[in-house]
Image (cartoon, rainbow, N blue to C red; front, side, top):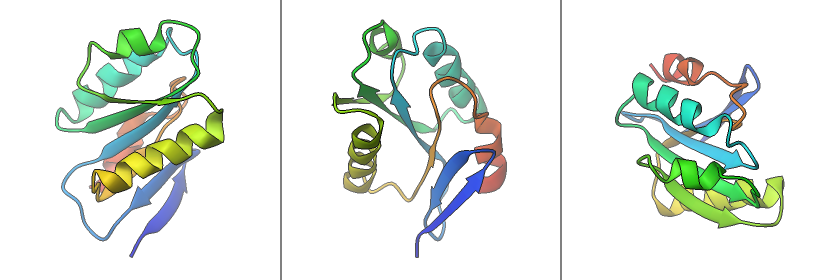
Length: 117
């Protein structure tokens, strides 16, 4: 059974039980924010899996993200298609749960961890 919840505008997709949180983050020109968001997630949960979907970024967002343990998925067809690509990745990777965050930092990943626990 799969449940979708909305907390502080962050979409949370969860299967019955999971041991850790996975993050799906669509990225479009977020060079100013992406490193701090990834560091915050990894500070909260060093075992977290992070999937960044490059939504046709024209800045250094993806180059900056490559220095971290993240999965990077290309997508050049806008936000909705970036999300679809990310969810396909999550299904193929057999993730048991995921949290979708915006790359601009408006969603604090600490809420995802609290919900998960």
